[in-house]
Length: 115
Length: 116
Image 1 (spheres, chains in turn cyan, blue):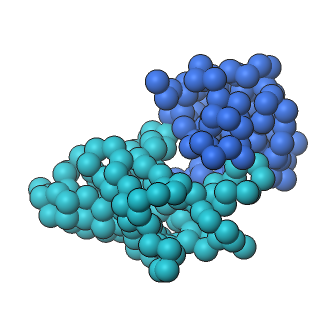
Image 2: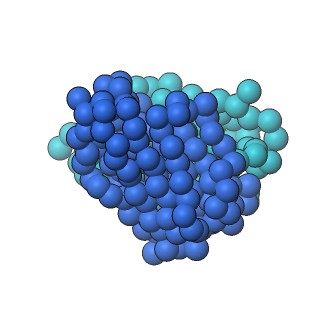
């Protein structure tokens, strides 16, 4: 069965410090991996994805994520956090041959960046 | 442009009402999705349309009825809802059909539904 785990419900970071939001996955075959961000009372906003190629993926707003196949992880990172990065972050996985394009979401990690 | 629009933004309805949610995209995407999201929880897939045909129904109660009039539009018809159906309803679309390798789903802003 496919699954995604985000082990931290909440991550607190000081502005200017690096941030990491963790994600591990379990899927048959090669995965497509996604990160989305959700600001309060808004829809999900696509940040980045890993399909194939370089393990380090760069996305919107200075975010990047590293795909690690041996550890089945896809952690989201940013070198210097901003207060405006405070939001709810979702990791999602879709197996390449999954019928219907269903995304399996993690439970979400609430990021709080304090000035 | 990766914009999915949804109307209305907010909807309050009684349990005997009939209402509809609307979703629109003009990106040429061939797969469209309805999700339900409770506060601070991940979205739960409800329906998937692929090339205007219903391809997935995640055992959603019949009081929710989807419709895809054309490749750009997706509706969700609501009837006899329960208070526990109150949630944020999100629409999404993806290019090339749901099994395409380019299947990034782009989400709309959602409709906040309250059932009294």
